[in-house]
Length: 288
Image (cartoon, rainbow, N blue to C red; front, side):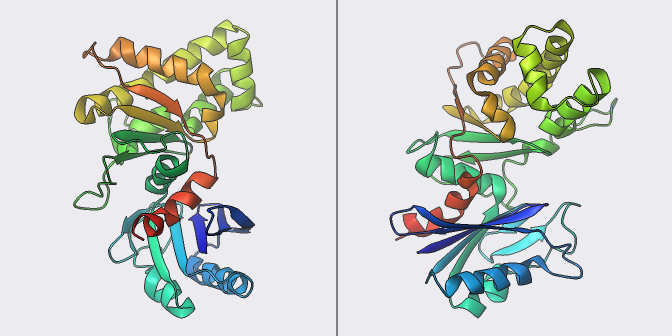
C-alpha cells in the first residue's frame, strides 16, 4: 500500500493507493505558511493518522520547487512556499513513520503518472507541459532525466524578453491569459467563459486567444527543436478544453516550426489532479 502526497501552494492532497493501484482514500488540507507551522510537520501529522487505518510502506511526494531526488530534499523553491529549502522528507517524515519516501518536482510526477496510467501510458520520448500559475515542463526518455542540478525541463523560465522584461510563463501561462482576459475583455470573465466566447466566434476573444496561442507555441517550438520528442502532453486545468485547444496549439506549432517534417503528436493529459499522486509513487512500483 502507498501514500501519495501532492504539495501545492494552496492545498496538500493525500491519496492512499492500494496494491491494485486504486485510490481508496482522499484527503485534503490547507498548505501551512511554513513559518508558524511547517509543511513537513503537517504532512507527518496527517500521514500518521492515515497509517492507523492503512498500513502503507511507501510515501511518494509531488511538490513545487527543485528536489534532489537522491537526498529526497528541497534544494530550491519559489516565493509561493517560504522556508522550504533544506526540507528533507526522508529524515523528517519517512524515518519517523518507518517508511521509504520518494519526492520530486510536481511536473515530473505528473509526467510519470501520465506515462504510467494516463495519456502517455507506456510511451517514451514524451514531453509534458503543464499550464497553470506558471508553466512546468518534464521529459521522459525511457526514464526521467533529472539534469545535473535536478532542474531539467524548467521551460517556464525560458524565452526571457528584454523589451517586456517577461519570461515564457509570464506571457503564456494560464494565469497570464486570465489577466489579459480581465484587462482586455471583461474583468468578471473566467477562462472557461472566455473559451465559450471563442467557440461562439466572438471576434475580440478570438484575437486575444490567437495572441496567447502564439506565445505558448513559440516555447513549444523551441523545445521541439532541442529535444524532438515523439509526443507532447498538455496538462493543467486549461487542458479540459480538449481537442479545441489542442488543435489550435498544434496548428500554430506546425506554422512556426522551421522543421516542416516534424510529426510530434500532441496529447491531452487524462489523469487530472491524480497524475502527480500516481506519478509520485510510480518509482516504487517500477523498482520492485
